[in-house]
Every structure is written in structure tokens, then in C-alpha cells.
Length: 144
Ligand SMILES: CC(C)(COP(=O)(O)OP(=O)(O)OC[C@H]1O[C@@H](n2cnc3c(N)ncnc32)[C@H](O)[C@@H]1OP(=O)(O)O)[C@@H](O)C(=O)NCCC(=O)NCCS
Image (cartoon, rainbow, N blue to C red; front, top):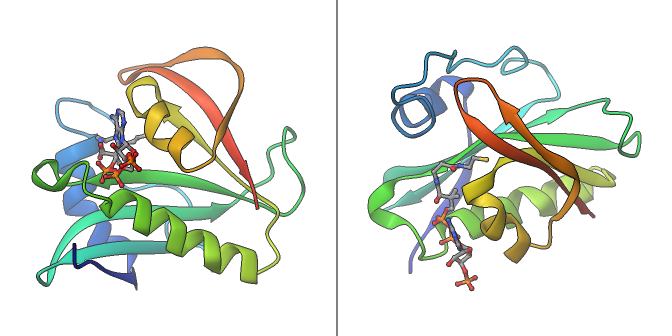
């Protein structure tokens, strides 16, 4: 499958965030740290069309090493699921994080997405928790 992965602007993530992550969910699709200097956004394209997004934000969660990033806003278009778009997106971003000397990446994963993250090497830490308006989540992390 031919995918292209590239850095994109925060505003380019908004349409897919709204459609995939905020459908029927009354929460903002713009995130506080979207425009921070340390934040970066990746998109995956197929036939020139943006079909997947993920955002990476420098963070300070005490559970993790000081050199850490949080992954947020991970989504791929429904019509391309299960063919590796999400995987190539995350793996490309991980290469960049490693080059920056980042030691851990973590996310609050929707319960139904945990298998996806596990296949990428992420592990669960802590117990299931509920994010209001979204549902059950696990915190997951990957050592880089
Ligand atoms: C979770 C999501 C990003 C996965 O994207 P994707 O493009 O389908 O993932 P990939 O095709 O790269 O999958 C990589 C591997 O994970 C597996 N996988 C992906 N989603 C899965 C799921 N929901 N359940 C079980 N396995 C899954 C794939 O089968 C594939 O396995 P393989 O390597 O053995 O072939 C996508 O389903 C999505 O956008 N879901 C809705 C929004 C969402 O939940 N986002 C995450 C919020 S935390």
C-alpha cells in the first residue's frame, strides 16, 4: 500500500479530528498545545488525500521520564482502516522522536484502540479510567 507521511499544520488535522474523534462528542477538536513550538503533527496521505493524523506534544507526566511526548488526536479514515496507515504514521513519528533524544511516548488510549497500540509495542500502565463524554481509556506508553 502506497502511503506518504509528512509533517502537517495543526489546522490540517481539524477536519479528521472533528469527523473521527468528535462525532457526537461535545469536546473541543482544537487542543491547548496544538500551536506550541515543541508540538508537531503528522499526516498520512494516500493518493494525495489526507487519511490519517496524529499529534505529538512535549509533556511532563510524572509517570514517565522527563524526556517524553504525549500522542494525541490519533485517527485514520474509516475506509482505510487495518491496512497499515496508522502504523506507518506512528512509526515515522517515533523515528523523529528518537532523533530528538525523547525516551518515552505515551497516550490516553480509547479502550477499543488498545490492540492497535499494543501491536506497535505500547504497554498499559495503571487501571481503566473513564474520560467524560468519550468512554473507557487506558494510559499506554512506549519506551524509545
Ligand atoms: C485506532 C486507529 C487509529 C487504527 O488505525 P489503522 O489505520 O486502522 O491501523 P493499522 O492499519 O496501521 O493497524 C496496525 C495493526 O493494528 C491492528 N489494529 C488496528 N486497529 C485495531 C483495532 N481497533 N482492533 C484490533 N486491531 C487493530 C491492525 O489489524 C494492524 O495489525 P497487524 O500489524 O497485525 O496487521 C483507527 O482505527 C481509528 O482511527 N479509530 C477511531 C479513532 C480512535 O479510536 N483513535 C484512537 C484514539 S486513542
